[in-house]
Image 1: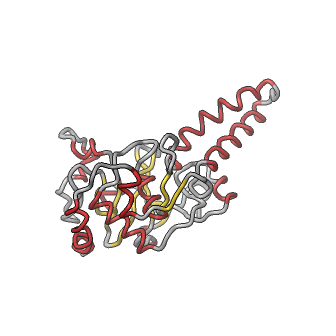
Image 2: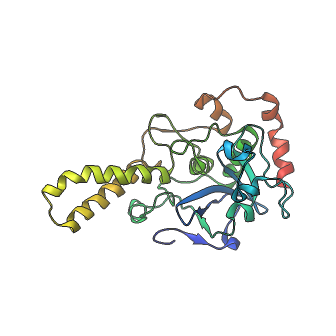
Image 3: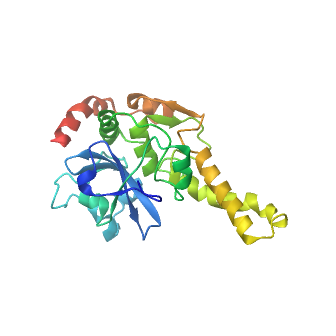
Length: 256
């Protein structure tokens, strides 16, 4: 367990693990669920998948992966994708998201999107959710309320945010919101704390507390929702019944 992140080797990850890798020189991280067999189920903006002008960085979503014939598999109008591990990583390092950490460890992680105090469900439950969502979708992608980290967190915990107006489960999103919020809240204290060190300490403390307050392990606006009931709870448009009925057999085929 690292202070900032939890970097691991590929040989260390197990089916059901929530993994992530950094993009754009550590500007942000991309998350997914490792389902075994060098395969990862992850969630991406649908527009990137459908764009005819996709950049070379998005080329792994095509069906031309030399390692895994089904790399890039997804249902129509869905952002949930099955990729091989190599294409998911894009030559980046692999990190394992941590669950059930103590509040002190959570606060020590300066960067959001690396851990949660929430406890994960068993690996088989996580994989079932990921494969089910691969067949049935995870709604519309939203950077702050329904992103790749939200997808992986739901697969691991089954927790759903009831308040659709606030930030989602993503620790990455709460960090983006928490940093400027902490700066704004601490700015009046400059009059009482002329020392730059004192102001910086207060700002850092507020930033950490804002992250902790939005963690799914301590929030009170979360509920446990079965993956089969997810579409109803999120108010998605009617899912095709035939897709739901065939999901189990398709999952077995993809697992092979």
